[in-house]
Image 1 (cartoon, rainbow, N blue to C red):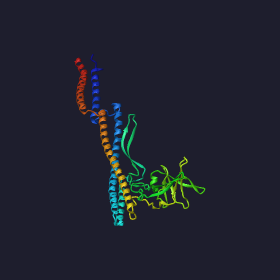
Image 2 (cartoon, rainbow, N blue to C red):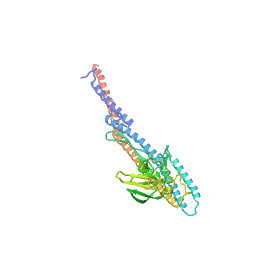
Image 3 (cartoon, one colour):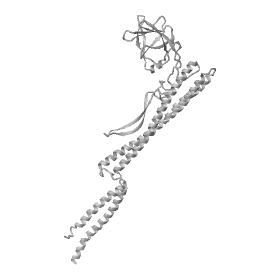
Image 4 (cartoon, rainbow, N blue to C red):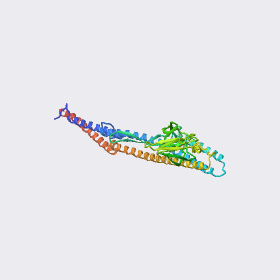
Length: 404
């Protein structure tokens, strides 16, 4: 049937042309954007995954920057520690030289003073972005951002690498408590003293070390002092220990694993301290010989002064410096380990970011070869559809020839 009112062929050709044009728009959009899934309407599931992973990748980029900042802090601290080790080695050598007979200790002390000033300068300068790990408050922890993690439940977290700023890693305690490697106290003269210990009426003479209060505090000792009842010392009361020097005429004696008795020589008293352990066993300390007069003032490397030290005290100070060197070497090794870990983590984050980019690309990127081929096919189909529509539209013109 031929009708001049309804041209079914033209409508069919027009519908085909519209479909081809729509497909061409989609293909051209993919070619121009490079994306097969450019919006949620293209593929809601893939678009959601891609959007989330792109967000995570941006977080990984921030982690990469944080790793770079952390690496700079670690490298700064390591360089400072390495330089400080060389200076302390020189201090140790000067102390060894000071043990030689007839040497001018005053001249060596002048050199030591310069070396001590250099240690202070190194610690002050080892700062990056306002953060100093060599001159810091002991007992704190610094962290370096290491990674951004999304677990299988979708929960996200930031993982960090921690570095403890403790008495074996900080050179100078910024809090002023003198617990850093270079400002903590070393006992340069560990004197032995002989005391009489009375256990349930049985006296025994023993030799013990006269310890500084600082060492006992560091060891976590429990302190007690004597209390007197009816003119006799009968029990011990808990005491609060404070940092400082053991005074002439007093010292600490260990009466069990964790308790130290402060024994003071009191004229006319044969037993100044008594400890009862709860099982009817009494411990007494006889200090009538006043054995603690030889206890010397402690020293730190920061305040090192050799002018008044004898040969034994110098040997003890050399041992103390060697102990400090051991702590510094361990701290440098820890910093080196963290630096290596940060480098490995940085490489991993780079690879992880590339993998995420690749995975997202597989989901949403357009295959340009395929899209190019499709575009050419659609262009050909469009031309044919236009031809078909032209032919269909010309059918109504052919009706005129019937009326001629």
